[in-house]
Amino acid sequence: MSTSRTARSYPDARRPTDESWPACQSLYRARIRQRIRGVNFKFLLTSAGVTNTSIGDALAELLGKPIDESTVLCIPTAEWGHPWCTPASAWRFVAGQGDLGWKSVGLLELTALSSIGEERWTPWVREADVLFVDGGDATYLCHWMQQSGLADLLATLPETVWVGVSAGSMVMTPRIGGDFVSWPAAPDDRTLGIVDFSIFPHLDNPDLPWNTMATAEEWAAGLSGSAYAIDDATAIKVVDGTVEVVSEGQWKLLRP
Image (cartoon, rainbow, N blue to C red; front, side, top):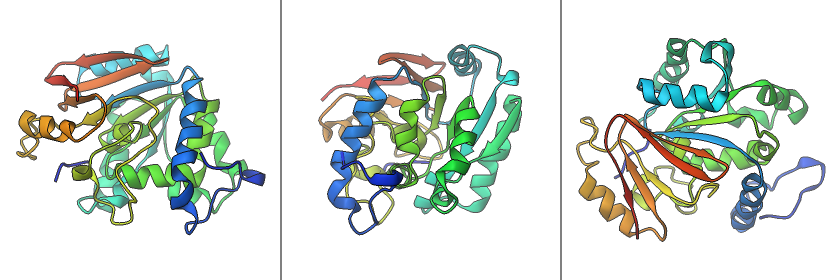
């Protein structure tokens, strides 16, 4: 859920401590961008997940096989950075994947990974066909993707599909805008910048009456690059840098 209201190479796969992290974030993100942009990575960036047939078909196309033959790892980490999210909402996200008919569904909690060792969790990620990443706060998710090592690993997963929901999509953009930052420890509104556009999700959602097109346009004016405003029936498919909007609803490309 999101609402509007490179560093040096560290030996032995170690990343910076929390104390040193802010000073090297920009360089680290630049290194991750350079590595992932050289890989034919597949993104399905949604506002609310697989909410209609068109988005489901786009996912199957990215997978190259039926969903019922595919495995998914659900990542709820962004939820912990947003004040509206709860253990119950995280459970609903994971439990809801059963409706899509996956071959298997697993859970990957990024905040736990550094305590169990990469040799244990990296095979889980490599074996998954899809990383399904929930919403919450994108800056919190960005932090834990870097701290856990998942951001580094993405460049080695050219066949994996990243399906983002709200903040799980926004984390791949360069900036999310200050209105979408809820995590108090966020240093700024910058995220990984793997794609070259920003995303305003939940356009015209009745539960978020302030998420209007006028609000999205005002938000986009504060950014330095292009952005998409998308509703919950829309997704943005990105393959090898090529962008395609998949929608049964409303969306708009907003330019600075």
